[in-house]
Each structure stands twice: as C-alpha cells, then as structure tokens.
Image (cartoon, rainbow, N blue to C red; front, side):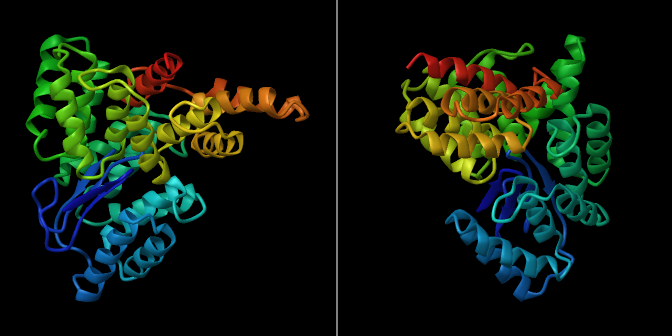
Length: 349
C-alpha cells in the first residue's frame, strides 16, 4: 500500500508503491509529488518498523506521534523519513510550521541519489509554499530530479510545458507523457483528472475519466485529488451534486495540511454550508490556509475580520488584503481553478 501525504506518498516497507517500486516514497503534495526510488540510506529493520508505525499514525490522525517516529528514522539518515518530515514542517502538521527546517530536510534528501528532495524544492517554487513563486526555479529543480529518474518530477515538468507552450503538437506530446504515467504516478493521475474535468488544452471533457483518475489517486492518499473530486461533487459533474461528500473529502485533506482544503473548510464553517456554521472554526481554518499564503484565504480572513469582528482594528484586515494583493498567482494551476470554481459552486447551495 502507498500513501500520499499532501506532499509525501510513502510506500510501506517491502510493499509495492503506486509507481510500482519497492520501498518507494512519492513526494507530492498538499498541495503534489515526486517519486523516491532506490535503497534507503539505512535499511535496518528498526528504521523500517519506525516508518511503518509512522504510516499507521498518519493514517489514524495521530500526527504528533507520526512526527516523533519520523524524527527517529530521520536521525538515522533515512531519506524517506527526511522527505516525509520535511513536508510536515512545510505544512505545519504535527509540528509548528518551519519553512527553513523543511528546506533543510529536502536539501539533505537532494544529496542522495534519489530525486525526491529536488522535486519537493521544485514544488515549493511551483506553488509558492514558503517561497515566492518562481517557475524557472521550479523547472530547474524538476529537471535535476528527472535526471535521477523521478517520475513525478517528469509529470510536473510536463504540466508546466502544457501551460507555457501554445504549440498544440508539443502540448499533445506532454499530455501523452502524463497519460503514460497515469497508471503509476498519483501526480499524473491528478493532472489527467484535472484536464478531463475541465476539458483543458485539447483534452476532451470526460467526467467519468476525471473521477476515475481522482479516485485512483485518492486511494494512494493524494491530497490534491481529494480537492479535485470535491469540486466534481460540488458541481454535480458526473456525480450526485451535494455538500456532504466535499466536506468529508476536504476535511481529510485539510487536517493533513492542504491549504486549498483548509480554505474550503473555513468557508463551509463560515457560511454553514456542508458544515454547521461556526465562526470560531471558520477563522481557525482560514488562518491556517492564510499562513500558507493562500490568496483567497487571506482575502476571506480579512473580510471575516471586518464582518464578524467589528471591534477589531481595521488595520489588521487591511494588512491581510495587502498580503492577498501581493501574492503572485498562476491562474492555470489546477488548485486555483478549484479555489475559484468551488467558491462559486458553494454559492449555489
């Protein structure tokens, strides 16, 4: 079994991962993923046991225990534990968010012969997680990971090529790259699900295929795909339209540090749609998403302060609006489609 943790997919020791490799770690994330293949720096049975226990704790929502187990394995220079632990520091799950610590751990993995460290660093720049978005730097890291054989880095690079090129033949070639990885990479599944859901870039709009891609990736724990499928349910695209399923999907992803999912849980609590209205919980989840630099979360939190806390200093709301305005976004990135589209869909309930 393989689990993708917002940013990390990790195969149980001795099991087949999504990418078909033994002892694989797919570094995703909440936000998407790069595969770590090869032999662990430390193959000792005790490390395998620590990783297995960490997976169980993660799946059961025991995040503090998960962090302790991963730290014990990381202290023995296990790259899988280092990659996973880095994503938790980046997301602030089970530990206080620490971008510098996350970067340090990813850079340690990058010193090995696997590409997960470079993939994670590339994702930070692709999504603006703790750094200013920079597509050039993102691509540079992905290319370094590709040299090391990282399948998911190849998927990210292919999607960037799809976004940045107008040549239809080149786009078709890159879509074929994603399609070819669609049975082995959770990240490829997510991108193909997104393309089929919206009928983007020459890919036919087919809800059945989109749902299949999302569900298959979700079975590996891929958090972005939780949000993608939630979007399908909110709009009634190939599935029954409703709020219960999106709330359940977003809740699981939000608890594991996915900023977009955190934003939607906050909105649901704020508006009483899908979840009972709870201003305290709404602010808590919006604040978590805003801490990741999520543009609409910053805006929604500022508006929340004005609407729900009239005694609050207006300067604090203004500061949130300014932070939102300073965020550099790529409207074509899948999660931004969902942020905008799901917000509109929620208004219809």
